[in-house]
Length: 450
Image 1 (cartoon, rainbow, N blue to C red):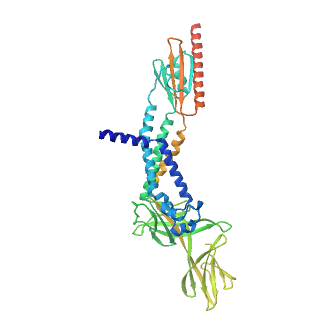
Image 2 (cartoon, rainbow, N blue to C red):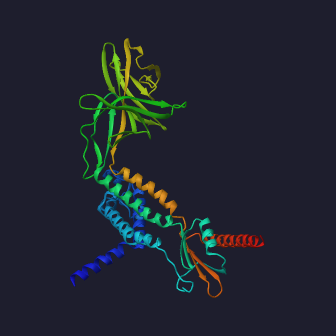
Image 3 (tube, one colour):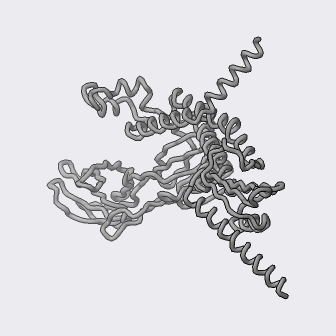
């Protein structure tokens, strides 16, 4: 009795999980949650949500920072309930594929000879015409790329079986995509770093990591150069970082210049160019060298960097940087432009030789590792192909001969989509059959006359 109960329980669970409506409902819930995740900013600090989602504001005064934090809406894709939904959707697809799709595919390949007296089948098309030759109708079906099976006075033909295979691969592609996403979630990591030009860096400053992830401590990098290309209107066209991957012995392993949408890839790690900043100026005054930090501010839509240098007990000058074209503007205490200077150019200010030797910059890098990314790419590739192929019609045709009474053929057929095209196919087959019959008849008449 216990065995029967367990068996029934497994069957009932399989029946529920393989239900198409359940899969669609779960998919809609996942899609809705993903939309919420694009509306509410993810992975921000508490102060950000308190500022943008105060208690007495939001949509109908219902969405505030407390609700966002308590429900995990600030990191939706890492919450236990969202992962549970993905696992449930994964199990539903696997169960549906094994219990419905694969048996249905096997059934579609089975020869299905039915007698012309079968009234139980719901058929799309039916016709009756005089028979001359079974060989002619088989040839007509072959011309329309049907697979034909002949037994006595019955013919069964089908085409478009790949249209029945495609849904199986749609499920497989989604399963692969979900598998890759889960592998990336548990084993991947994301790192943000600002690295000064000329400095060596190692992988640190993790902002997101999976429970099973580990940082590769044996990888070092060096920013050999950083530069910016400008448009004619002084707007930024692109910025570049020349990166060298080195080992612990100081040997160069790989060198590449990265820019936006052109990352460096090395041993499963991808280094993206994300941002940049000006850190300080290296200045030589007389025989002494100093390093002066610069501050950033906005002037309209443009960013500028500035710092001040005392030149006497009461006076000071301001150095203004607007871009990395090596030109620095010099203003006095009254806000008047008194000079412009290029890097490594020497001028005299207050009887002192003044040289800006370097504009010191940092490049912003995002370093990511996602071991499941290949599965995601393969899944989406299979999904695009299989989703397209799934629109092909699966069509079946039955032909039964009534030889003893009227010497007639009964043609019946059905298809799962493109019904008008299928009816046109059947009319073409019958027309071709009639043409073959006329040609055969004329050929026999000519032989008789000879």
